[in-house]
Amino acid sequence: MTIRRSQRWPLIAVLGLLLVTGSILLANQRHSGDPPRARRELRKF
Image 1 (cartoon, one colour):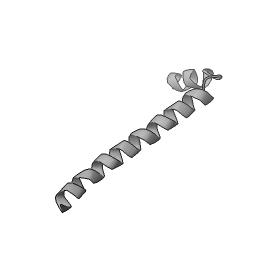
Image 2: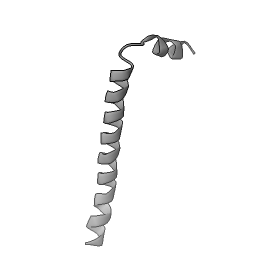
Image 3: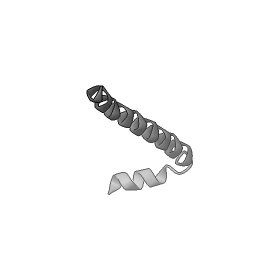
């Protein structure tokens, strides 16, 4: 049983990271929807 439990931990970690990254991307899209100039300046550098 210990082997199965150890195999579940990485899956839970990946799912958690996906949820966090997804929420961050959605938040960034909402906040950065108004000023697109910042992205263009970053691309220049």
